[in-house]
Image 1 (cartoon, rainbow, N blue to C red):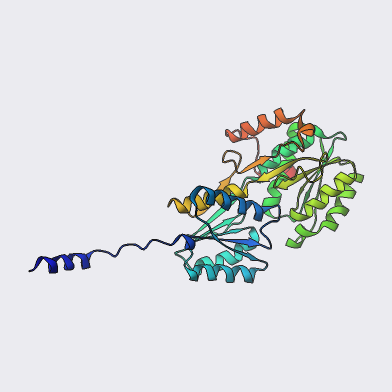
Image 2 (cartoon, rainbow, N blue to C red):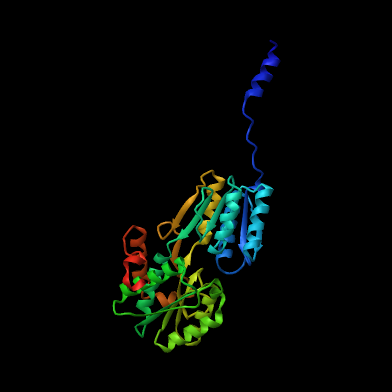
Length: 329
C-alpha cells in the first residue's frame, strides 16, 4: 500500500484536535442594574479589570434589571459560544438554575448566591467573620453602651452579618446593649432609604450611638441618619468609610472583586471547579476597612480588632454558627 495512503488512513483514525475557544468567547459577566453602583457590581468589574490586566483577556458584558432579562442574557451568551458566565447576587439564583440546566457544558459562577448544579460554582462569604470584627469595633467605640444592627431583610447572608456583629460586640464589651431591626421582608427593603432613616432615628432615640447597616443601598440611609445625629455608622460590602467622614467607624467588606478574579483566573488556567466555595478572612474574602477616612476613629481600637482578625484567619473558633448562639436566634 502506498505510503501516502497509509498516512491518510492513520490521520483519519486520530481523534479530531480540540478547537481553541476564541478569547472573545471565553468569558461573560452579567451585572445587575448598573456596573458602577459602588457595591457588588463595581467590585466584580474591578475583579475583571485585574484579570484583564494580568492576561489581556476581556469578557463580554451585559447589564440586566429583571430575572427575565438575566435568563435571556445568559442564553444569548451561551448560544454565542461563551464558555464561562459570571453573575452576582442571590437575585440570580432562579435564573442561573434554569439556564445552567439547559447548557450543562457551560460553567456558571454565581457570587453571593447558591445553586447546586454540577456546572455551577457558588461563591459564598463568611460574613459573620467580617461582622465580628466591626462588632468588636462598635463595642469598643460606643460611648452609650448601646449599639444596633439594621438589616435589609432576614436572608441568610444578612443573618450571618447580624450574628457575627452580636458576637463581636459582646466579646469586646460583655455588658453591651444590642438593638436589632430589619427594614422589610422582600428585596425592595434593600433600596428603601426612607425606611432606613425612620428606623435609624428611632434607634438613636433608644440610645444607640453606633449602628451597623447590612442593608445594601438602603444602608446609606442609615449612615446618613447617623451622621446627621453626630453618631457613628458602620458600612457594609464595600469600603464606605469616606461617605460621611468622621461618622463612619468602619465597614464590613465582602471582597466580590476577589471572588470574580479567582473565578476568571481558575477558568483561564483550567482549574475552575463547581460546588460551593467559601471566602473568609483566611482567603482574604472578607475584612474590616481601615483608611485615612476612619484612621482617627479606630486609632485606639485597631490593634485589638486586628489581633482578633489574625486569630480567626489562623483558625481560632471565635465566631460560632448562629444555631449555637442563643442571642442570634
